[in-house]
Amino acid sequence: MKKLSARRRHPLAALVVLLLALACTGGLYAVFAPADKAKADETAQSLAIDEGKKLYAVGCASCHGTGGQGSSDGPSLVGVGAAAVDFQVGTGRMPAQQPGAQIPRKKVIYTQAEIDQLAAYISSLGAGPSVPTEAQYGPDGADIAKGGELFRDNCTQCHNFTGKGGALTHGKFAPSLEGVSPKHIYEAMQTGPQNMPSFPDTTLSEQNKKDIIAYLNAVNGDDTVSPGGLELGGLGPVSEGLFAWIFGLGALIAVAVWVAARTAKAKKS
Image (tube, rainbow, N blue to C red):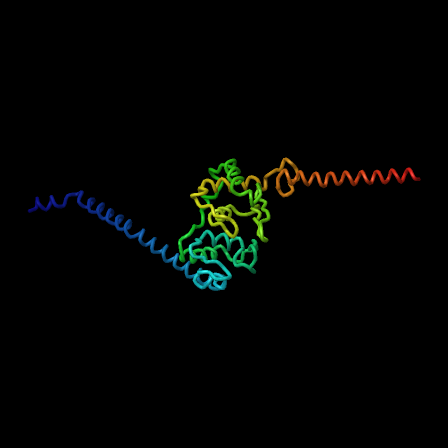
């Protein structure tokens, strides 16, 4: 009996039991910890939706309907996604001051936290484009030359080849892209606000959007130098040449008339 008891109490037995206990504890943590984190994220999202609904009721429901279904004063917001909310509210276009052919950019009245809450509520009404991450619109890995080509092919008809903007029909206009944050440019391409067509990833890939943003930063950045001198709004060689012809020749004609008048007066005297 003593020999059998000694065999059962092997010196390594305690170590094996300890290792098994640790393994079980780790396994339990792996099972329950992610569940707790997911539950916490779900709770935070629910709170954001509730707060966003309150903000929506005060600032948006009068035009877009109590449930985002839209009305005669504003379109439906079901399915527009968080990116559309972040762009429209983050650039001050919404809430709109008054109806018109186009809603201009103005001072932002919500904090970013409130914008995120509004976006969470609108996203809960229907799936749509999400707010992009910095990795999607940042300069790392961007091809500026390719971005310029894509911008000239898809955007210059309205925004001008350097993004200075331009007039459209019926009082509408393509706004200047100078000074617009890369995130909002990306969101505009995703969602197609107001008169702009949307460019989903099936039309312009994530890399294409990154390249276009890098091009705009290159031509409108603080360190950008214009070797041609005064660019006259970047409207291109035709308009700039026409300006030179009209005002340049006009100035020469005015000088010629003044010289002729002075010469005739001198001869009479």
